[in-house]
Image 1: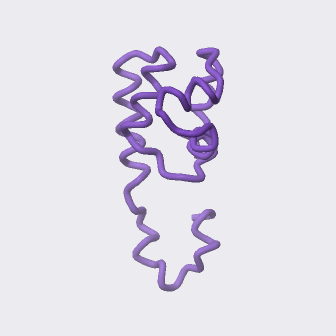
Image 2: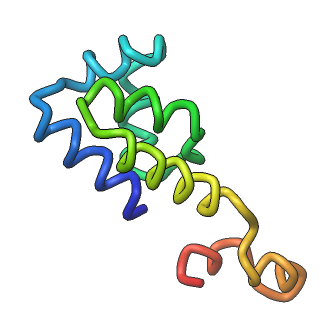
Length: 92
């Protein structure tokens, strides 16, 4: 969720609209909105392309891509999914 918010902040700081970001990835604006709200997984290639579009430096791009890859890995709670209700995972 934090990465999505930071992507949104960077887009706004760069003066890019949702349409600009969607055009860079060749997706719909809804996809960008979902990425920024953490409703879908952050694809490292998407993150890299967006940050290039927003004018981020290589170090920041690499850092974001690494964080996106880590965010997509299953957390410790996945081993307990048989006892933790699905609705509760947002809180874990």
